[in-house]
Length: 189
Image (cartoon, rainbow, N blue to C red; front, side, top):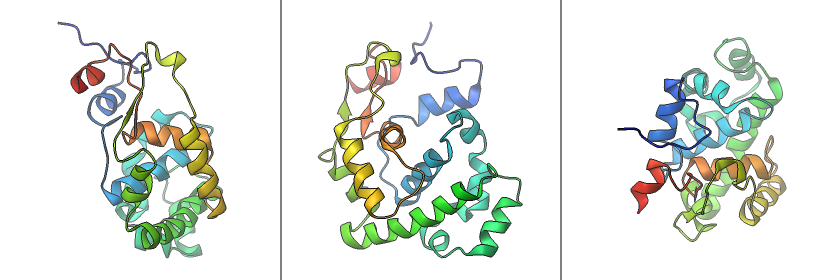
């Protein structure tokens, strides 16, 4: 029996297949996991998502499990440690962005109670399920991703844009952009 997946999945790569089947588009509400996913999305700017996905364990190690409080208090020695670790994409601006964004997320937690509350209120607490016949025709931005991007930029967030935010929304399940024929979309029905 053949399984139907979204057309963007590289079937020859088990990491990509597992990510699609088990993670992408599933509702994510855990604070640490939301911070990690958002951080990883910022790292993929200019690179393939698969490159970052394959380095995810390295990022987890370098950023101490994406403990928001720890990362928000990182200083120059931590940046040097991460740059020299060989575990992540070697880009000082991208590493600094994770730290800057962590500080911004602490402020969002104070204001909204949680990252979960902040992000999920933007979609009314439930996923937007889009009609996607072919992933090549799927949106890569939305009014909501535009709004979130503007808000986060005002707060000083780095390495974000509406496409990055929309990719985050897809990945954490705020938006379901699985193709209509995909087994993951079929599970929702």
